[in-house]
Length: 255
Image (cartoon, rainbow, N blue to C red; front, side, top):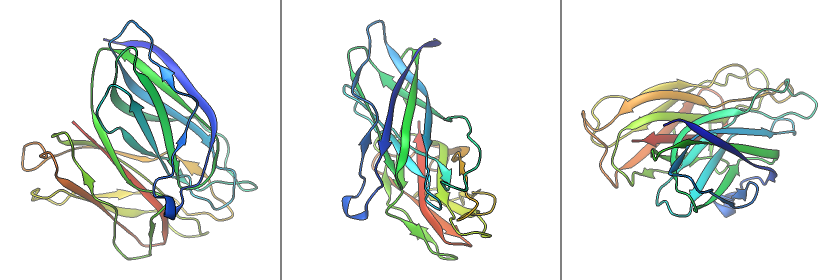
């Protein structure tokens, strides 16, 4: 089992997520038919984009849909704030580890749900031999804002395939100058008796000195007791920040 090929979708400009629309999705590129020679799985994503407006959030959700696969594959990405006159230097595309079955002949569609408009969203899918699967669920985004020193609960995620949480991804933006970008993230799993609390974010916020960053990535092994999280369990993410935090977005990978 190993690397086989890579396919780019995009560039496509995304639209800003609007509260009234819930998750407003932008398809990146066109529908792609997975070639013969499988079985394959998508092993990694590389996400590139430009947020080119000052003091606008970079957080978003990437969603992968494979026509023959009944699963959830959603990933938080992006961090920090965009810039037109104040942006930091260009950097590399953001890597996202994933395991998404991609049988030959299936149709692949890629969507983003960005908190704010992004230019030229371009996404690489890196395909490996063999079938591997890790579902990933996302919550939060452009319809949420966190008030300073007040805990915010994001929409609960329903686990549809039993397993343990193996990775947490978090993105959010503090877009006022001279304010801290740090926060506390709590993973609330019913039946898990231990606290699951994590520091996320870093550096100063920025309205006039913003810059895009990658999401926080935290490797974990969270179950119920020592076992898997049962199907239909509702997992809630809670965020507390000392400063106002825009568009907190989180995803959990479950296997």
